[in-house]
Image (cartoon, rainbow, N blue to C red; front, top):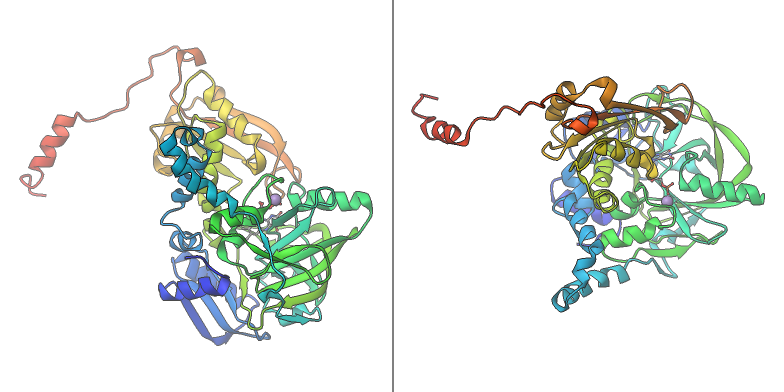
Length: 478
Ligand SMILES: Cc1cc2nc3c(=O)[nH]c(=O)nc-3n(C[C@H](O)[C@H](O)[C@H](O)COP(=O)(O)O)c2cc1C
Ligand SMILES: [Mn+2]
């Protein structure tokens, strides 16, 4: 089923028993966080707060906060299904031979539907009103936060040189009814486009869509190369084009199905203190200076729902968005590095802090090669700790991975420490954006890697005895 918009998704969640409505009045300041934190951590449903103190609009949260709901959001049985589809699309052999060509035609037809489709009239422009963020049920998430934050915004900008769109999720701190922070980190596409406007010395138009169909929301978080428009990717994921409409005050096209659209601009000569904010590392990210978004117009549906999320100590809702990325981007990584078998970003590492990767080791130093490869690719550059294991180890089985690390590693030989860029959210590094990273080679070592002794065999029981014990298990009295 194709979700027309966020409310369509809400309806489906409700039908599946994956949504709870909360009819009593609840405070968007801290109270919603505490409720949501308890619900996420106990594997509970999405929450629709129908009466948020101080606002006429209902608030949706935790819509993505489980593996089941993430699958529903992207309309698949399992996230690996998307990986398989991408793998098939990328496999050239699928296009050779008549029979395969016919099968491929349906695959390629899907690509024809990925491009956004312009429409003239859009639900997101049913109501046009003066800018006033005070009317929205915006959360103050944690006690030490610098204020209220829009936590699930789809920030849409246009490259002034190429005209292409970018859509990234960057939190927005509310300063007053018309101004917010714009927290795009320096390595992100939004910031790169901002730098271009800054060089030109002109105001940067920005539009923010709040609440779209779930694939479009997810796409704004996906670490795509800058050249790929997230709305094209959303079209691929939802198997239908994203309908877009032109903003009322600028040339940016926004998803027509958005619940709210904030139109405005960023002044390239202005920075303002942003934060602190209780972040997905489980710590507060410290105050820092970021660009400022000036709201000039709000357009919205007649009866919109405001979506939000709360991040904090993992696991939180955003962990499941991260897991979708882990699965969806694996085929791209495998295409570049066919030795990769599987990958796991443990939730405790909040994406950028730890990656476990299993490889088919083919030559001396192969594990070290893959560490450097990952540090050199897109947002993987943030990865502080990379653990490499042999293909026989499942990276998701963290206990077995730990056993390999604790027992297979000679630290002097197998640990690689390098300097390089880090995520701004890293609070342990000596500098902002820059510090060290560690790779741990937990694979079996070879003679050519300086291991002159005999690598011992892993202990395994013989199959005959296993089978014998299986057969006699009841007889033993268990
Ligand atoms: C809930 C949530 C909040 C996020 N907040 C920020 C943020 O404030 N700043 C930022 O740079 N990235 C943030 N991200 C990560 C970006 O959305 C992600 O890196 C995305 O790929 C950026 O898009 P871009 O590559 O087009 O810049 C957040 C992700 C999620 C899921
Ligand atoms: Mn991008």
